[in-house]
Length: 304
Image 1 (cartoon, rainbow, N blue to C red):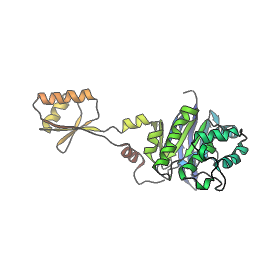
Image 2 (cartoon, one colour):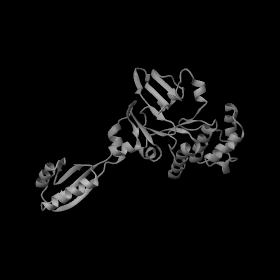
Image 3 (cartoon, helix red, strand yellow):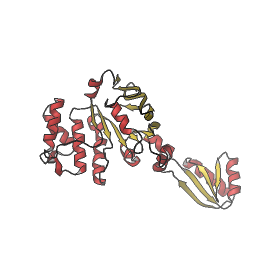
Image 4 (cartoon, one colour):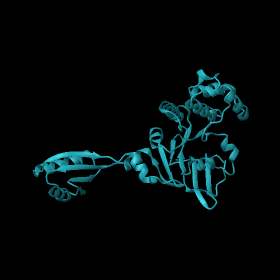
């Protein structure tokens, strides 16, 4: 990758001697949806505020589009759209009028309002007062305002927070179309693994201000691979036979547990046991869920 859209090195923020974010090294590729995942209070919003230049880091550097944020802040921010926490709006005004107020600040063509309302699926609600919108509609309006300036990078902080299942689905599908249809790189923060798993290509997990995992969702799934449980008639003798053939296994009560392996190895293992007159009662895959893995990584009940 020649250019990371976002790259931080040693990014830290300290408040009264305590680090809210510590030594963060993010790498976000162009065209990716990056899921920034962690429990509430882990440092996600603080990080996003530093990436947007809203608060100054205590240490470290931020490069966006290959440029240093502290040197080219205005030119960088012109290429970014963001929604941090809940969107702001004027309840008595329509969606169009709310976006018009932002459009004048950004100095983009008036036609862009209709374009972004169409992107977020609010074209038919354009003239309704926003105070009558559902939470999901208000969130989509917030994303529409973030898209007004034709950004190359979109930062969304907990965009599905407080939404019902249908609202969550709407926002999820909207985010997924951003790179494919509009060429926009997306950074989305969440405390819900299920949401990140269904939208992101890459995930970074933050715990107590520190990045503890950063890789593709596919590799996170690999880490969640479980084991094969084998119930046989004579487990001790079966264990000896498996070890003779170089297969690592451990006893778990009356069952044998093997590390996750391929189907060919399992078939060969069962065949050898049957040839030695072992009765095979059950071959079962015991998977560790991604939720279990997430809790293992962040530490259940720990809050920053």
